Length: 234
Figure 1 (cartoon, helix red, strand yellow):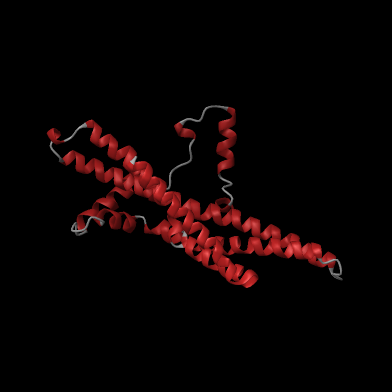
Figure 2 (cartoon, one colour; figure 1 turned 90 degrees about the vertical axis):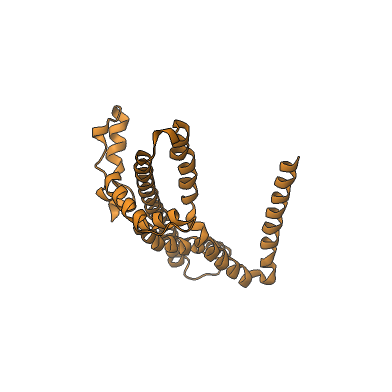
């Protein structure tokens, strides 16, 4: 748990790379569950069994194959929400503690705040590493499965219907956009929770004035959208 939580296993690879150029045999062995042969077989079976009646069929098949890392990333991401919300509360408590000069338990409270600060920032680091680790495992599975499915489909098509440009485009640009978008896929469900909790805490402090940031952000987004449309028309 400690090894994976703080990526301790990378230290030996970094020390090796600092002394000489890393060769392929110097890299650690790949998890068999991430191997293209394993993922490609699962993706091929799932694609053959699915109903290809929807334009989202490939997306559902991909999530079906890579559902393991997606589920494993949920718990650390939820924990990260708690630590992110605890951070401003901790800062507020520290400021209140510094301003309160009549506290009779200054030493005890100060030590408790130091421990809380250590736990909050350590939790943010470990939870971020954990859910990002699972996210990139999912991206690796998606890459291996989609590329294997693409190769198999390409080998079955007549050579006259293929060009090098079309294959390279699918392998590079399209999948790079998919991977880049999936890196921040947690914002779909995690960000609304964080925003809701933050607004609730802000409401307890300033009342209905907490709605001012929402109005500002929405207005800013609309102005940017309108500006983009105008520049496109021009």
